[in-house]
Length: 533
Ligand SMILES: *[C@@H]1O[C@H](CO)[C@@H](O)[C@H](O)[C@H]1NC(C)=O
Ligand SMILES: *[C@@H]1O[C@H](CO)[C@@H](O)[C@H](O)[C@H]1NC(C)=O
Ligand SMILES: *[C@@H]1O[C@H](CO)[C@@H](O)[C@H](O)[C@H]1NC(C)=O
Image 1: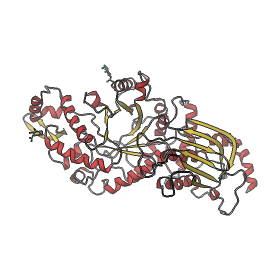
Image 2: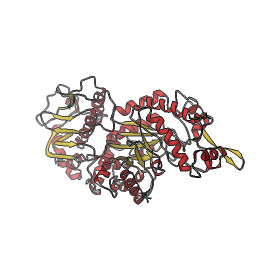
Image 3: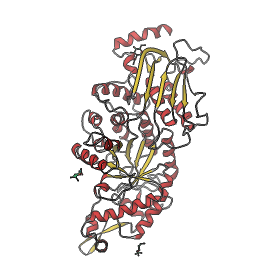
C-alpha cells in the first residue's frame, strides 16, 4: 500500500489531472488565498474537527457539532475508507486536526443568521493542526466548507491537503435562491437538498415563494381553510407547521435565512378559494362574471384578515424580513367592478388604479411594520410610487440589462436598498453554457455614485416553478446557480471565465460526489459519477 501511494503523483501527472489542479477547485473563490506546495496527508481514521480551547462555542453548540459531522462525512464518508486502524500514529506529514475557534464572546450558536451577520473567517492549514477562526458560527460554517474543498484525492483514494492560508468574507450580504412551491408542490426533501447545496455554494437566503395563483400549500393555523381549499391537495400537498419548522431549522444549521413570500394583491387566485370576499369579483357588463381579480382593497375585512394572517407569519418565520410581493397587478378586474369604481371616486383617485394599488400596499406595509418585521417587495411597488419605509428592500426582477441597470440606478438614487434577480431567472433555459451570462452579470454594474452602489445588498437566483418540480429541480438549479453564488460572494474582479470554468467543473463534480445531481457544464467526466439513483 505504501509503495502504491508514492507512485500516485506520477500517475496523476500522466493523466493530466495534477493534484495542483485538484487543490485549486475552490468555489466560490475566497477573497484571499495563499497556498503552498507543502502538502499533508489527511486520513479519516485519525482526523478530527474539534472546538479550539479558546473558542466561545462549546460542545452544546448544535450548529457547529452538526457541521463537524457533516463535513467529516463529505470528506471521508462513503464506502472508500481505507484506513480503519484507530491506533495508528499520525505521521510527520499528516494533518490530524482542524480546530475551530469562535472569537466573539457571543458565538450566535442559538441565534438565526441575519442580514447584518459577520460571515467572515480565517483559515490556516498547517502543522501541528489547522485553525479556523471566525467571529461567530456563520463564518465558521463557510470556513468548514472551504476547508473541505481544499482536500483532494488521488486515484487510489488517498487524501491530501496543502498548507494554505485563507482570509475570506462575502462581497454581498444577501445571496439568495428563490424556489416556487405553488406552481408545483415541492416535497420537503427537495427543499432540504436545495438548502444543503446552497451551503456548498455559500448562499445564505432561501426565498420561499410559497404560495401563488395556482396553489396555497401553506397550512395556516389561523386560517386553515386557505390550504384546505387552495392547496392542490389538502393533506398531501401542504406544508404543515412542523414542516415549516423543519425547513427553518435545517436552514439555520447551514447559516441560511428563510424569507417567506406571500405575494399580494395580485397572484392570489388560490387565496380566494378558502377566504370568501377576499378577492375582487370581476364584472362583464352589468353583472359579476364569476371570476375574481386581485385582493379587494376597498373592504375593511381585507385588512382585518391581513392583520391576523401576517401576525401568524411573523411568528412562524423568524427572519427579520418578509417578502410581500406586489408584482404584476392586473387592473382590468378592478376597472370592471362598480363598487371599486365608487370607491375610486370617494377616495379621489380618478382613473389611476396605481393609486388604488398604492392605497392597498400602504395599508399592508403598515400592518406588517406593526409586527416589527422589515419587508422586501418587488420593484413595481417602487415604480408605482408607494411610500415606503426607508429600510425597505426593493427586489429588481424586470427587464433587459439596460432596463434593470436603469432601475437599480433609480432605486438607489432614491436612497433605498436593493437586490437583483433580472439576469438570474434560472427557469429560463437555453442550450449551452448559460452559466456564463449569469457569471458576467454584476449587481453593482450601473451608473451611480459609490454611495448608490453601497445600497446594493446582493441578489437572488430564481427558479420559478411553471415547468419545475422535484423531478428536475436540482439539475436545473445546479451548477447554474453556482455561477451566481460566486458573483455574490467573491471579489468584484474575479471574472476570468476560463478559470471559472475549470473550478466550476471541479465544483460540480464535488456536488455530484456529495450526492447532488448537478448537471454537466459540457462534455466531461467526474472521478465518481452520479449513479442515477
Ligand atoms: C499542492 O501541493 C502539490 C505538491 O505537494 C503541488 O503539486 C500543487 O501544485 C499544490 N497545489 C497548490 C494549489 O498549490
Ligand atoms: C372601514 O373602516 C373605516 C376606518 O376605520 C371606517 O371609517 C369605515 O366606516 C369602515 N367601513 C365599513 C363599511 O365598516
Ligand atoms: C428611471 O427614472 C427615470 C427618470 O424618472 C425614468 O425616465 C426611467 O424610465 C426610470 N427607469 C426605469 C427602468 O424605470
